[in-house]
Every structure is written in structure tokens, then in C-alpha cells.
Image 1 (cartoon, helix red, strand yellow):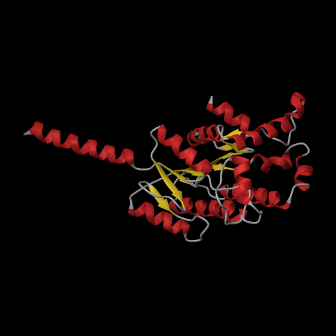
Image 2 (cartoon, rainbow, N blue to C red):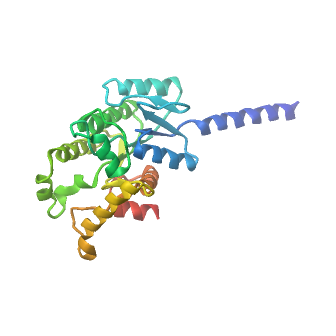
Image 3 (cartoon, rainbow, N blue to C red):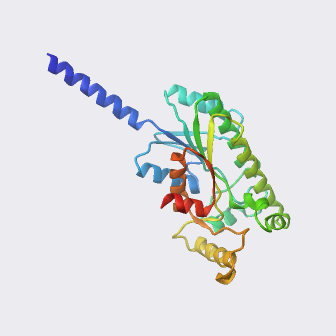
Length: 269
């Protein structure tokens, strides 16, 4: 009788453990996008259960949600509560290089990074508002949480040589893009519950995409100026695979901080 009871208890423990193991431990915003899908794929290949958040998310461990909307924090919290989930690790992958104000934004995004997503929102909505809503959602939980945020290398222009001058000469869409990224970075600092690792890649590309590779070759040549001098205001492009690995490392980093490409490479080696 005792052995039978022990066997039953053992089975129950195994079932509970299996259920817990399948529960999502990381939430990825923009999970179906260009960067987000690569991040999800890498994390899941390492045995991490991911809650996929995007407007078009479908299937298990997915929530179709628009984080540009003001009710997004409440919808997200209700989902966690109804599914008895506690998540304290987040990745913000929502973003685009060309927003709705830029003609032919879909084609330009594909040329720049290989992403062909059609964009129908502004930089402020896509980048800042989604981050602000994520901060509100995390703060309402009152649990220490980790956020990895995909920013941009050019956000750091004010602190590098010739950066301010280059930004002042930049087109208006790029200035709006950088402003939204900076506002999002600042928003992450407003919650005492958040430790943020901010990744600042330059152009993000797909290694096996020809049009993306042409862009990369151009930027690499420009940044090195014929291999002699590296311009301080131009960072080399980053492959989406390297960026995904940096995200995974960032989720485990307890200190947070800002990582440029060279920092990412050092961390993932």
C-alpha cells in the first residue's frame, strides 16, 4: 500500500514539474517580427518556454495583443492571472527603421534588414508607447524583472565624436526614430522593478539574404573608410543571429547596462 501511494505521489510530482517546466518564463514583445521571431527561435532551441506577444500571435503560449493601445497592460495582466503565470523576464523587439510617415516603408525596411513588414504606426507608437505600456505592466506586478530592449547604435550619437553634427544633418524621419528610442530607454529607468539591458545595434541583417548583404557590405565599407579609419559615429551592422544570442545573454545579466556591437560579441563568445 505504501509503495502504491509513493508511486502515485511520484507521478503527481512529475506531472506538476512537467507543467511548471512548460509554463512560459520569458515574454517577447514583437515575437512574430523580424528580430522577435529569431529571438523566440533561439530561446526555444535552448529549452526556454516563451510567451509570444504580438498583434498576430497564434498558437500555444501566444497572446494576440497590441501594446500600442492604452489597455494593453490590463489585458496582459489579466492573461497572466487567468493562466496562473508569473513572468519576470521580457524582451522588447517591437520596432522598424521606416515608419508610416516614410513613403515605400515596406520596401525600405526589406532593403535595410530583410524585413518586409508593412508598417502602419508612428515611431512614437511603435517604440515609445509599447515600452511605456510594458513598464506599466511590469510595475503593476511589483516584482523585480529583467528587460532586454532593442535600441539603436545611433541613439548614442550625442556622446561620440562628430555624432551631434551627423544627427543634425540627418533626415527628419531618422531624428524622430532616434527620439522615440531615447524616450523608450528613459521610460525603462522610471520603474524601480526593472533592470534593463539595452542593446544598441546598427543595421540588423539576415546573413543569407542577398539584398540585406549588399546593404551590409556598403555600411562596412563606409564605417571603415577603405579599411584605414573607423568612423566613431558609424557602427558595423549586426546579424540577427548575433543579436538574438545577445538577447539571450542579456536576459541572464544581472547588472543591465548598454551594449553596442563589440559588447555583444564579447558577451556571446
